[in-house]
Amino acid sequence: MIGTRYKVQFWTNQWYSFGHYFMRVISDLFLVSLVQPDRSLNVPLYRQIYDAMRLAILDGRIARGAKLPSSRDMATLLQVSRNTILNAVDQLIAEDYLEARVGAGIFVTGELPDQV
Image (tube, rainbow, N blue to C red):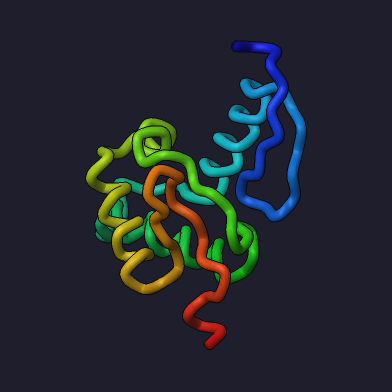
C-alpha cells in the first residue's frame, strides 16, 4: 500500500501524517541512531540494547507513551537475534520502563520508575 497515508505516532508524543513507507524509513533510522550494539565490547548485546533504550527513555528521546517497533523489526534493524531484543525488552518491562499491551504492542510507560 505504498502511497497510502497514515497518522503515525512513533518515538514522540506528536502525530505525523506521512506515507507509510516514508515514516517507516524515518523511524528505522531513528532506532538505529539510538541503539548501536558493539560486538567488540565485553558486554552482552542485550545489555547494550537495554542500556541504550533505558537512557533514551529517561532523557526523553523516546517519549512516554511511544510505541516501539516490533521485536522482529528491531532485530532486523540492529542485526541481532530476536531473543536478544526480547531479553532487553523483558528487562525494561520488569523494571516498569515499558509495558506490553495485548494486541497493540510495546509502549513506554506513562510514569517512569525513576520519577516516582
